[in-house]
Image 1 (cartoon, rainbow, N blue to C red):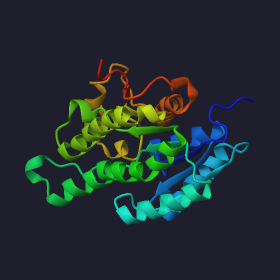
Image 2 (tube, helix red, strand yellow):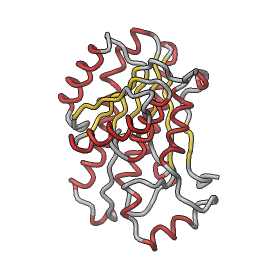
Image 3 (cartoon, rainbow, N blue to C red):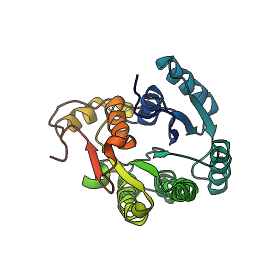
Image 4 (cartoon, rainbow, N blue to C red):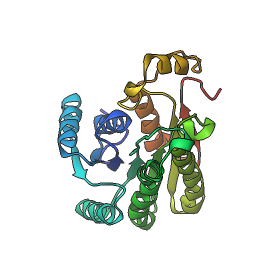
Length: 252
């Protein structure tokens, strides 16, 4: 049976839960060799167990424990992993992300800095760590998971919106830099998806959000993962520098 990502070597940051975990699972289903990055060992072990349980015929998933906000830890861990793969990597998915929501007038330096460090600074560090290998092989796909909030904004999320808007600008610029090396760089902008992040919302907040979504429901992680699968596969070889919204029509 043909699989879209047979034998592809893939790193997924933020792969222990939510959208990142769903992406890792569908990639494994399609024949990929996946390593997920996370900060919590118990969660990482549980995620790998779940992913392998969902894909008993295609179980090739492992994990690395690394804080993507730690530059030296990222460089060391990814260098070792890429060497283990014979100095090769096919696809990178940057999905690590956190929130720390407050109105700007109440936001602390720590609230701002931590969100930007995990969501945006890590994008720079992780991508820079794998890019030389991709450039040498003159092939590769980079998929960055941003958010519609980085496009339309949201009260109480200036830090999160800024980090996700930064991801979009980073991706479009990098796409132009590396296109001649056979590398594509694309962004997915999910809307409100059923993840641990959205589970923190009150019923009033959820109802308010749904009024802004033409499809009148939250998305599922697998729906974002399907978009990532398309961008990771050969079906998207002529697409780079784009932003694919998976948002139930919020940007329509």
